[in-house]
Length: 208
Length: 208
Image 1 (cartoon, rainbow over the protein chains, first blue to last red):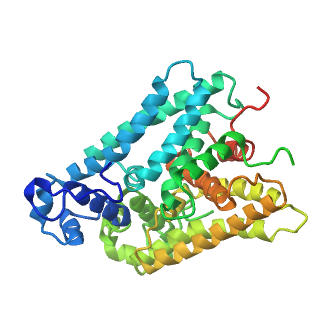
Image 2 (cartoon, rainbow over the protein chains, first blue to last red; image 1 turned 45 degrees about the horizontal axis):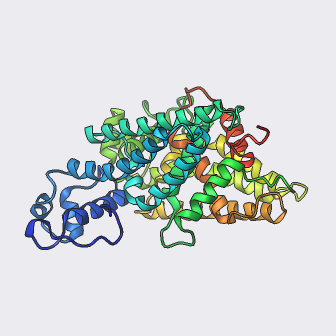
């Protein structure tokens, strides 16, 4: 159960009726994804929720504090996926671990779409955003190392520069946040299977 | 030569010294990509350029007018690519036309990266943005039709839903705007070749 789960139980924060921190966070992420972080204030968020500004400050100390919670929601999950793939016993090849990390990244993106959308739009205008960009770079570096490992094993083609492979592969994964609709035709597992099929085996029918 | 070309010749607009419309447009796109369209005013743009607001209004009638010019810079090029691929003589297969459109889309994204970045972040808060979203949907529909044509020919795998193919393929193309650097290691043609190789033939080495 996470802060951006679509239907979390409403927990009343510290005895105060109305919105709890998770609900404030969901509304903030939704507002920022629609209007932009820089363009919206805590006052705008309070209006959106139909509460007073002090009611918001009951749950978070500042707009930046709320942004950090939102970005951590995405970053913590993605970090777990990448760390587990990087730390797996060496009985798994880098190629196998790369396929697992692609699959699991799609699942995280689908389950945490609002906060990942926000994360991918971070521009680095504030210390919290710079910190998030630093954590994203760590993820990118570990993913690039996994791709290089799979090339070194001879499992991945070596006629495309490994850093371009990594950029394009996770570019395709990240693009999900722009169009995936949870109420649409495809569940997370269909999307993950389709994406892995295209990325690893290609679109062209070789038996044709 | 387009409005967002990195080094256009400076044409003095209607005899007034200083910035011409192309330079104002470039500065606006850059500012919006850094700070967000909603968060920035014509006054902010004037400060950025070190000119007065009337100097800006000498070139454009409104902030929305400027946004339309910026989005058209990306949309006109992408529309040409997609229309030419859709209208080609039937001697070319849909598969061949799809490969061409992928290649040429990468070239447009690289040559018009700032305006395409802006286009991909449009949220639909204003009539100009809604119009741009309508034009993007037209592009998406034509691309999806091309993918379906290639599947119907038997050239593309049919175990992945064609609309997912289209989303993921052009998701990978669009992701370029997030990381491609014109002063980096790879030129447009290397990126286009790499992307097409991965998308059509896959990452896995089948001869291994």
